[in-house]
Image (tube, rainbow, N blue to C red; front, side, top):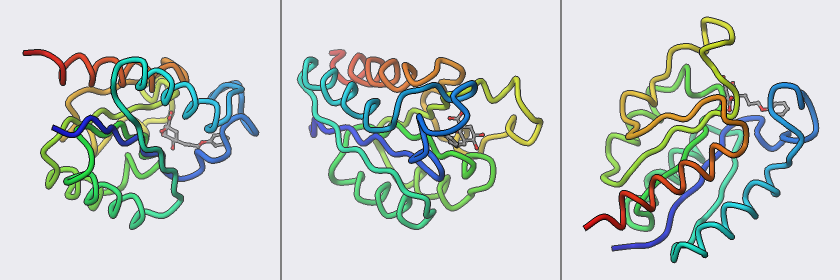
Length: 147
Ligand code: CA2
């Protein structure tokens, strides 16, 4: 079994730490990725991180995960609420999928309350700030290392 976990981030998450700290916190995406990499390594796993503002790039990464990753932690950004194509790609993936939102989408506009990705996700995180990524990582490792 691969011990590599993909951490995928969708549109605008490259702006983390630069705008709207009241909603998304002060950490940059690079900070989050560094912490996740260190945590994964301490647990005997590796992570590959990718952020893209383009739906097709995220879909290609999900396809690649079929051979290269035992789990995907995905913050699809606004594609969460719109993308049947990302859901279809996830449905063709056999590993674990965790959907991770920094903000509590259920306390925000109603258009953020529906997620296509949740139809496939093994777990959904929302409102735990950037710590949510590490919590997803811990849950993935816990499930992957159970007998
Ligand atoms: O809460 C989340 O993590 C979201 O996935 C973030 C998306 C939003 O469309 C989802 O409804 C919930 C937006 C990402 C925008 O990220 C920014 C970060 C800093 C500054 C500006 C945008």
